[in-house]
Amino acid sequence: MRRIAGSGAIMLELLTSETPNGWKVAILLEELGEPYKLTPISLTNRVQKEDWYVALNPNGRIPTLVDHDAGDCAIFESGAIMIYLAEKFGRFMPADGAGRSRVIQWVMWQMSGLGPMMGQATVFNRYFDEKLPKVIDRYVRESQRLFEVMDTHLASHEYLAGDYSIADMACFPWVRGHDWAQVPIEGFGHLQRWFDTIAARPAVQRGLLVPAPPTAEEMAEKTVAQGKNILA
Image (tube, rainbow, N blue to C red; front, side):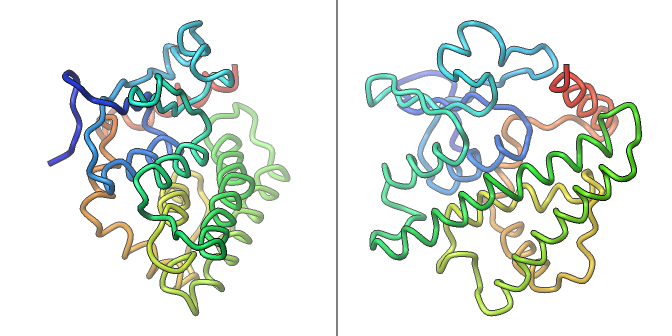
């Protein structure tokens, strides 16, 4: 059962939508088992650009976390949110300096590389009206190179940064989206083993339902509409 509440003395509030950056924070909250309030943000209706939301998140993107137990502290950028929560609750982040650094390195790698490259592969494969083969090839090849980085590392490591951590949670939703981004994953056996291990975790499965995903019939139309809206 998911630990989501809409009322009462809930200290954490997640404002999010059904995207990889949103899912990775939802997965962490589900792994932590801490109650939180869910506030869905409609990207199709551009709620993330409304004044009240931009006051919380100057970048006008999702997700945003508000910690009502810390003076209504608002945190934006998904990687920063994950580090904040891991340190607040003392879980999924090593306490020692070297271990903490390893986790943060992989989180930053996802934020600066895997997410942007997979995001651009998705944009030009799915949302951009004009098909630009050279552009598509550039982002697909770079995304696959990043998959190879993970695959090589995971050949000798069970998880990305020691024990299961926010590094794995940050990367998982982006790898999960490889079909939608049209980035092949075949041939990366160690990455596939890691992916299957993460996907089997009950908290991960719950996190992928936050907010409620569109039905199969709605999936393509709604997701493409959101993507095109981002480009506007």
